[in-house]
Amino acid sequence: MGDFEAQAQATFESLQRTLRAGGSDLPNVIKVTIYLTNMSNFEKVVALRQKWFSAPYPVDTIVEVSALALPELMIEIEAIAVEG
Picture 1 (cartoon, rainbow, N blue to C red):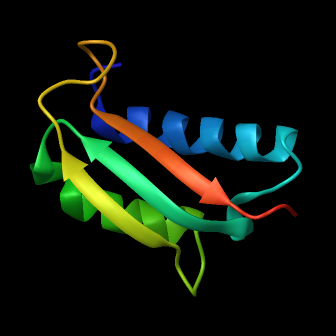
Picture 2: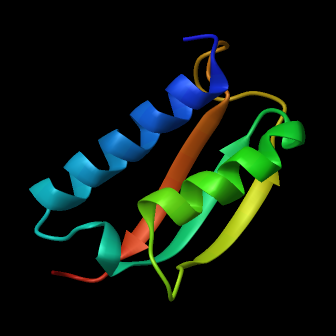
């Protein structure tokens, strides 16, 4: 999983599955925190937010961190959603 785009795609897909399992979905997300290990991927994240969310976009916080749970991870997303 050394490709940022592939990791980001998998992360958004996982988020969507998790939300649906809990009775919600991506349109119900009101806040996301996106953790990146390299802020040079910021523009890619902006494009991905436009792909996976629609206006009005959720409030977001994007933070660069030195590492995530696994050394190979480059992105992690935490979301708050209302019930669907």
